[in-house]
Image (cartoon, rainbow, N blue to C red; front, top):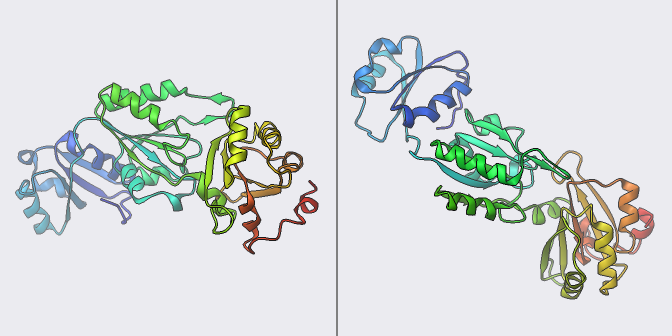
Amino acid sequence: MQLTADLTGRHVLVAGAHDEARRAVRRFAAAGAIVRPVSRPEHFTPEMLDGAVLAAVVSADDGGWPDLSKACGDRGVLLVREAPALSGGRVTLVGGGPGTQDLLTVGAQEALREADVVFFDRLAPHDDLPRLAPGAELVDVGKQPGHHKVTQRDIERLMIESAKAGNNVVRLKGGDPFVFGRGGEEAAACAEAGIPVSVISGVTSAISVPAAAGIPVTHRGISHMFTVVSGHQPLTEAEHEHLAGLGGTVVVLMGVGTLPQLTAGLRRAGMRPDMPVAVVERGFSDSQRTTVSTLAGIVTAAGAARVKSPAILVIGEVVRLADGNGAGQLASLAETVGA
């Protein structure tokens, strides 16, 4: 159930077995309510409704709690019913998209609303998590370049331990869990531990961040394919040759640190030095910025602009469309950015 009323300081009675009602109790408490739980119908007395504005029955048995239903009617207390929390621990890998709540899917929001524990990354939309996951324990396991406050193996261990304790665990990741998000490793670790795991796909930054800068990764007559590459480690010569030979659009995630090696490798592999390149920093944030140049000039342009992660690199003719005016506008880019 989603809360839309202000319950701060108001009395709410939650009826249901402890394990089934635990999430509702936390959710109402997080909304500021004074919560009175009652676990069994025979324990209920009408006086428990004194001062209450709401009673919630959290039970799989719709016919249960008849005395509570009658007492609510007699006293004018709103009665609602909701499904109980599922028994047994589980893990849901949730893609949070590129960081803006606007691109958080309906499925992701529902998973967060029902979570007992949320392990979140720094690039996931976490600023509003107290509202999105009311009552859940929120654990920051975000990793930054060169600094991992919690290692990947520790994250997997924490998720599994929490699920084994009976919690509904959400692992909230930026972008999509299966696009350089190590979601496959986490799913495998859960499966090996016997923990039920499901995946809610997210909007990958490989497509959405270029779009936020007005760059389509494909465009009729310009590019009919795109390749997504991790720039976390320098590519091999063979990989540079494959990329240069494919054509289309190349999108590089986590590629700021290896930008010099990437551009030099692509030029050695035969990619044109005047190929358009864009670096989109901090996509969808108030400080989003795009630096545009050519393959030959982007390293200098990025250095002059002091480009930093997180950023997405886009290499290809589609960069010409960044201004929204169609092709043919790149001729003066070198002068514009001083490349």
